[in-house]
Length: 310
Image (cartoon, rainbow, N blue to C red; front, top):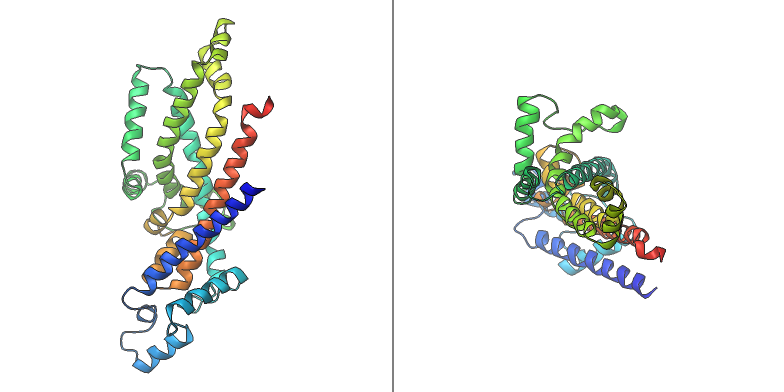
């Protein structure tokens, strides 16, 4: 029980810190949302009227406390362009969720396949996968995305360059619209999962129960896929949760690059418009999502821990 309260307190502190940081950065930067919403030739009276209507003429502390009160009460107010923040957020969740789920499935498929293919030491496959992982981990996601666009969109014409098709527009069309941004994230994160899972399975292969299984005539592949992999499942659950959280928290780059109307691209828009209320709401929700995913991954990892069976 104490652990749960500590986690909830840590979650609350995290949400407050990130929201305060973003709110402060936007509020104390030069200009405010009036410069992006109103035309350049807007009169001073119009600017003052807009700032008063949006509460921008209030002191920083008053505006931040009002924002916190609105967020926790569920009444998130309106964005700088007059749209309801709740509507904006809800309309953007499906795109980000689609990218996150597909990216997670891709990263696990790539990572586990390469991890098992490169288990044997001193082979060409192991050298190639290790080199691939090093390149992926050192490459920014936007560079990976651009390379995929050049190859799969411009050269092979397999996937659209930009835009998002919801599931209501057809399952295949929807998957094709988020395939490239999902693959960009998957390639980046699968390299770390591959290295860590390979190391974990290798360690288990040298354990006594693996040696006994070999002595009874079990093949290397079967031992690796079953006996040595089962103890590594808790680690896989943690890595999956961390990857999913990273996909949500770091989706801004790929969503902006591929013109995907998701949470990440909305956060970029809010920052460019100097919309502190919208940006603060988004980072609070992202922090909440990341924390909940991490806690869920830890819970699954604990359930999969073989020591629970003893």
